[in-house]
Image 1 (cartoon, helix red, strand yellow):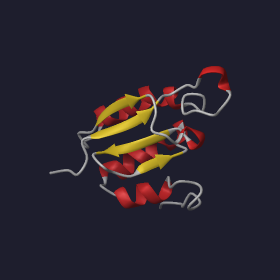
Image 2 (cartoon, rainbow, N blue to C red):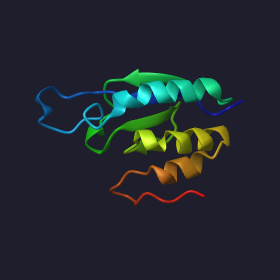
Image 3 (cartoon, rainbow, N blue to C red):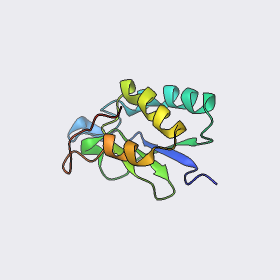
Length: 110
């Protein structure tokens, strides 16, 4: 049994653009490539969009569900890396590569 069933993506866009948000930082542009990539792979993950996960200032944010790691600052050019690590079940590498910026810098994954 695989540990995760969903990949959750915040698409929140804060009114007035006063504060940063995942939507403002490009999360809505991640939907199509993520859906296509997940459908083409073998991970059996379903993409779920939500309107806030409480960390919009460092988004876009993805989270593996249930109770998996959050991936911070994801951009469209990161999708292939994310899908590859998901396919390989390298969840710890994924969490380290997209760790919360205040705790660690983005690590390179080989």
